[in-house]
Length: 326
Ligand code: COA
Picture 1 (tube, rainbow, N blue to C red):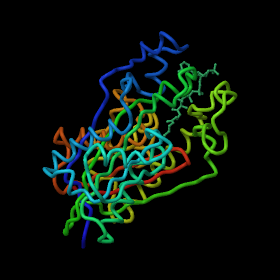
Picture 2 (spheres, protein in one colour):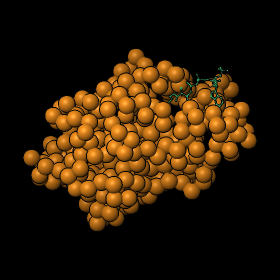
Picture 3 (tube, helix red, strand yellow):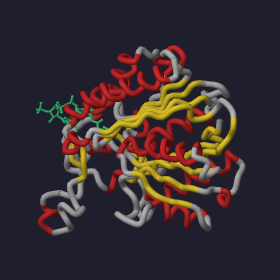
């Protein structure tokens, strides 16, 4: 059986650190509130002149270097993002240009914080169908440019970053074993960016109403997130006749610490099985899982044969899990 196996991981985190104490200077909030409710202490902010495609390309270069291959052997690039450089063309096309890749396929996936898992599942289908051999799957976001820095309910949560993996078609038992994707569009209004798409095209009135920024009803998101993240992780385990004990590393979307702890408890996981880095990077949406995966991989936390579960939830609502044998 042909499987999609991860042969390299990479990530890029912008240099500029924005701490909770920095937020206190311009927002009616405080470090203690943010840490208690979210576990977040700081997040990274892209520099002026640094765009989503730049972050994505830097993460991709690292992943290619770890894989020991050149960009020219990549057949397909998929970027999971909701903060692309432009509404169109796809950020994946800009990454392709920056990497100097001629030919192949490039497109973005829009599934908010589930973007990387959606992109990984899509890439896996391409590989298993035999249509491509090597794929760059990237999650990259510059959320700092779409969050409303006057809205303390939401802006404290988010940060910028990118993570990438190189997938290769290999025969054997290691690689992406199964993916499980879901969506429920009835929840779209709980987490979205109001302008400026075709429903609310660009206008100065829209700017006055702060339309181009992220809108969120945090309480409602919280409840559905915990239920969906835990249900889909259990679905992935059941599909493979595994139990929570069989997971060597569980990498959830880094939404906030309370969501992650409640999810882990509902699944039945111990603390040491769960990767949490939300304290340092906040919620980087589609980038959070590949950043965490790269951190774990470089720290030697994953060994060949380990069962790794990636678990995502985001606007739409969308959610999904990928079960990997490393
Ligand atoms: N600093 C200080 N106080 C704040 C604050 C901030 N940054 N943000 C909100 N508050 C206040 C509220 O105004 C409210 O005050 P009030 O009681 O006087 O009205 C109070 O804190 C409680 O607000 P509430 O929204 O009930 O807090 P909460 O416990 O639900 O925590 C979130 C808010 C956003 C942290 C929480 O709902 C959450 O994490 N939701 C999920 C969001 C998420 O992960 N989204 C992305 C999913 S991919």
